[in-house]
Structures are given as structure tokens and as C-alpha cells.
Image 1 (cartoon, helix red, strand yellow):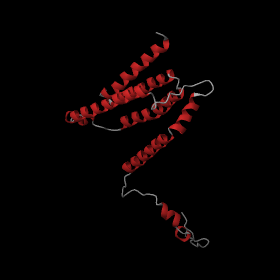
Image 2: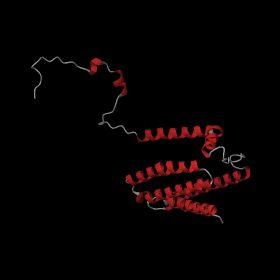
Image 3: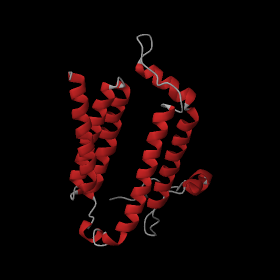
Image 4: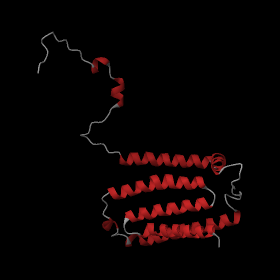
Length: 204
């Protein structure tokens, strides 16, 4: 067994164990730390596959932004996790049913991919000396999968708007900016010239 195979099995095992610990750890901060470890291990697997650009994106975007944001949110929120776990047994049956359905779908997808090949029968792209990995990913993303890429961007836009709408709170005692009144106001409503005679001004 060569060094590449040893590295693959090691990082794959670390990824699986870290993913399992994310959902089984009792402390949410530990779950986020295990998630960061899983991201790093998955980035190592991408490097072994020759997809250095995807590995860099996984580390920079997910580890450097998303996972750290999760960690900050978990540490800043005062969530009573003991109270949340009280009704765990009541939702266990429906959780088992949903998990079984998802497992069945994953198995069917794996069988379909194994029979028809990756990407619905298309051969996977292999990086060559003339074309870099980044160029091939960009070509595939903005040609073959351009509609899916735009759909993903639209989904993220809808999620962002939904998050803004859900977190927007109107408080009566807080002064808010009125763009319409600022744009439509006239000079005489905003400026007042008071004639003051010499020597009759306000003195301190």
C-alpha cells in the first residue's frame, strides 16, 4: 500500500468519524469543532483527487467563514439545550422514518450513478497539462451546469431575503430613517435663516 492510499483511508476515516461526532456530541461548541475537522479532512480528499481549487474553497469558505460563524453564534446564544432535549423521545419515530427514507434515496442514487456513470453518463473531466483545474471547473460550471448554478444563486438570494424578513423587528421607540421624506423635502423645510442684529446675539 502506497502513501497516497494510506493518506486517503486516513482522511476518509477522520471525515466519517468527525461527521458522526458532529451529530452525537452533547456540547454544541464541540460539534462545530468536529465540523471544522471534517471540512479539513474533506479538503485533503479533494487534494488527493487533484481538485486543489475545490479544496481551497472548502477551507477558505466553509472553515474560514461558515464554521467560524456557526461557532460564534453557538457561543453567543443563550440556548437552554436541556429544555430542548426533553421532547426528544416524542419525535424519535418520525425521525427514524425520515432517516430511513433519506437512506433509501441515497442508496438508489448510488446504484444509479454506479450503473450510468458520473453526471448522467458523461465521463468525468480529467485535468491535463494544457488546462488547469480551475479552468476546467469554470468551463463545466458556466457551460454544462450554468442553469443549476443560477438556480443555486437564486435559492441563496431567497434565503437571504427570508432571513432579513424574519429577523426584522419594528420597535416604536426607535428612530428610523425615512428615505422618502429625505429625498422629497424642500429647502425651506430644512433651512431656516434667522436675522440677528449685531450685538444682540446669544452670549454665554
